[in-house]
Image (cartoon, rainbow, N blue to C red; front, side):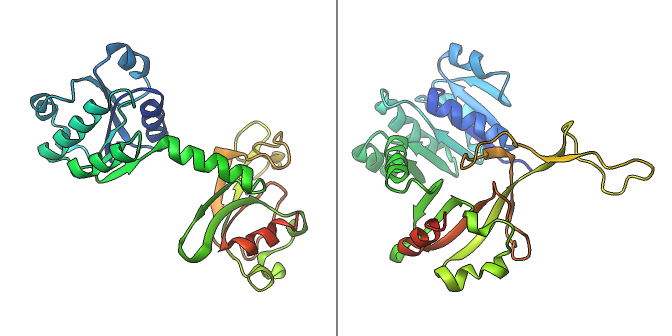
Length: 255
């Protein structure tokens, strides 16, 4: 059964959350008190609802407690509404509340009134930009305890057309390869060619995104292989690796 998610507040952040969840197959109820914001998104989400979420009666009548998760994405210019909405969601019995915080104090209050998870998009984006500047060779990176990092990086040139077993990455770099993202195969017409089509030749296969420049991240056209030990690496592969920062830097130097 698809998870049902409600997103309250349809500014830039809330809208992106709602549309991204739809793209991932979730059922999304988009809620805002502004009819214009709802009109703008109504054809792209499962359902929309005009609602004043600072009113407990309105939340109960909307049966908001039936949602698997409610995201409070109310903008930073309405902190009082954000706090009150979060508190009321807890009061009416919502089982999982994710709330957007504008600052440390706001985050603390949201947790106190009932948010199960709190995110600060501005802080997280600032950290992400700083990471990209400090570590320009990595697509994504986040830190774990004891100095261990998980990172995505483009395939080193010296790895291309070699297998993981041949390269022995763990021994050479003290790094674990968790998986490889690879472009999907398709026919030049955009459809996958049957492997055993009797009486007709195979269509010329290509990789979706052949026009992508070297080092450019292909994004959604990727598929993940978590057991790549016998596969030969391709030029546009992306490695998902785990190891200490110094070891990751040594791997990056293979470029």
